[in-house]
Amino acid sequence: MDMAMLVGGIFTMFDISASGLRAERARMNVHANNLANINTTRGEDGEPYRRRRVFFREGAPEITGSNTLGVSVDRVEKDYNIDFMYRWEPEHPDAVKEGKWAGYVAYPNVQAPVEMVDMMMASRAYEANLTTMDTAKQIHGGALRIIA
Image 1: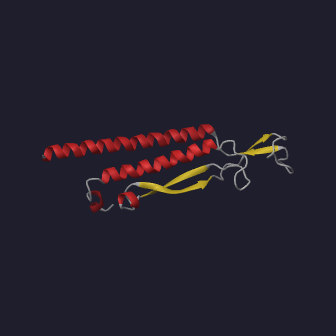
Image 2 (image 1 turned 90 degrees about the horizontal axis):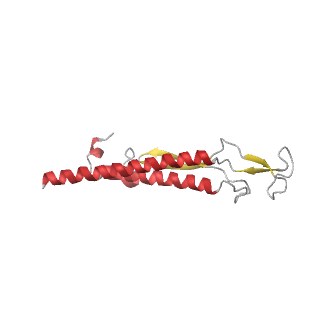
Image 3 (image 1 turned 90 degrees about the vertical axis):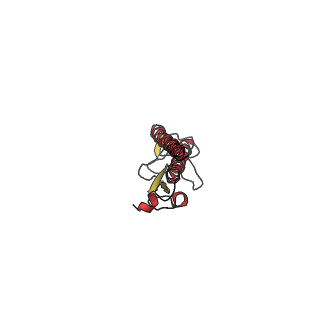
C-alpha cells in the first residue's frame, strides 16, 4: 500500500468509511429488492425474477482517490446457481403449459431467510462503518484540542 495514500489527508479515514457506507447501502437495497420480488413470476423478460447478488471490489477511487483504499460495488449479477422454485398451481396464468413442469409455476430463486440474514450482515457492516466514522471524529477532535 502506498504510504503517501495513508497519510495523504486527514479525512482518509472518513473517506474509507464513506465508501463502506455506500457499498453496504447498495447491498441492503439489492436484498430489499430481492425480498420485494419474492413472488414475481413474470418479469420484463417474461421469466420469473432472479435473485441478485452484489460483488464488491477493493478501492473506491471516486471517494478515496485510491484503487486500494476503501470498497465499492463491482457488479450486481443475477444468481443462476439456484434454480427457480416450482409450485403446483395449474390454474395460475403463469403455469408452465407443457413439458416436464406442466401445471407448475416457476417462482423466483429468492429465499426470505437467506435475504434477511444477508440484510442483517449488511446492516451490521453499515453500523461498523458509522462507528469507525465516529471514532475518527473523536481522534481528530482530540488532536485539535492538543494542538490548540
